[in-house]
Each structure stands twice: as structure tokens, then as C-alpha cells.
Image (tube, rainbow, N blue to C red; front, side, top):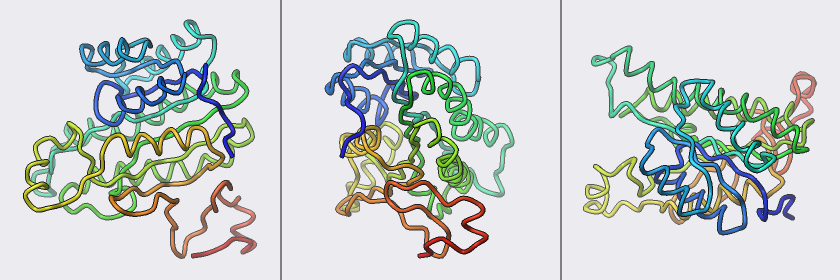
Length: 267
């Protein structure tokens, strides 16, 4: 059962200039939502915003004030904020342990983790004023599995998963759901240099359209505290954290008292 209608909903999407974010903007607008597009890429961001009949705001998610300004624009222009997709992200390009560079690492964490934190903190007051809403965060399959080729990226995405699962219960009191998507390799500009290699090896890729459809589904559904692992040819369902306390579909994660008492289901 859907709990929200996209028609006339107001959405904010970070990293909305291309790839998954841009596709989410298009699908939201097609459903009748009004969209605020955020990105550091002004030219592409403005193009997407014009295409979907929305607004663009230049946003560096590493700066809390930028996220605050984007939320303010949504409320000033459209009167409210209902849906949030915290999608902006980057990788290190395969930085190794021996080639560790503190500046590269800091930029990665500033965008992939801090950007999500700043976006969530900025959006929450507006979502409360709207009577509730939905947040979807883009993690990665490497947020639940190892990624030896870029351990730092995996660390940032694991952190995002932990954040989403941890804040779901307190956010439910405000009628705000929060979920994460954990897509595998997706055919977007993010992996443009690797697409030919994957094709030559016959390695299947997700499409941005497939991933965006799951984002919209989570924005309009009842689930909270879930991490949806997305892989080509596999069912779209919440990831089951084996042997670890976790939430069932549509249920928040267990409270500390439930964990202590043992009143939880373990995989």
C-alpha cells in the first residue's frame, strides 16, 4: 500500500545533474512531483531542472550551509518538502593502502558520509513541518560487501548503511521514513571508464532507470530502516543482515531494550 502520492509532492535530489540522481528527478516529475535539483555541476544541473520543470540550486554537499539553502529554496518556492534523495557521491578512483592520500580520503568522506549527514539534518525540520516525509540515501553494494579495489569507498558506504539503520526508529516518531539503496555497478557516468570493460567481459550492469524506480518506490512506500541490494536479474528486496538484529519489511530497527532482552529476530 502506498502511503504517499507523488502528485504535487516536493522533492529534493542531491547529485541530480546526471546518472541515478537525474533519472530519479525525471521519474519524480513524471509522477507529478515538483523537484529541486542539487549538484556542483551547474550546467548539467540546470539542464535537468529545466527538463523536469523544477529548480536548480548549486550545492556542494560538503558544506552544511549549501544543504540548508537547498531546503530553504524548496520551502520558499513550493511551500514544503516531502521527499529527499541524498544521492551525491564519488570514489577515490582506486586509492590503495600504499598510495593513501589524506586529501583524497577527506574529500571522499566529506561527500559520501558528511554530505548525507548534512543533508539529513537540513531536511528534517522541513519534513517535520510538512507532517512527515521520506528520505532515500544512495549507498552501494560495497556498503554491505567488501570492495578490495577501493576500501575507502566501501568504508564510506558502510557508514551510510549504519546511519540509515540507526536513525530509522527515532525518525518514525516524526512520520519520516528513511531507507538506503545498495546498487551494484550501474551504467552511469560514474563508471563511464569501465563500461566497455564490463561489456567485453559480458558483465551485466544495472540501468539508472531500474535503480531510480526503486528510489521512487521507497519514497512512496511504508518501509523504513531498510537497505535494498540491487543486482541485475535478482529480486528487489531488503537485505537480510544475517546474525545481526535487523528490521523486517515495514518495521523500524529494534530498540536497544529489545536487543538487550533478546526480543529480536536474528537471521
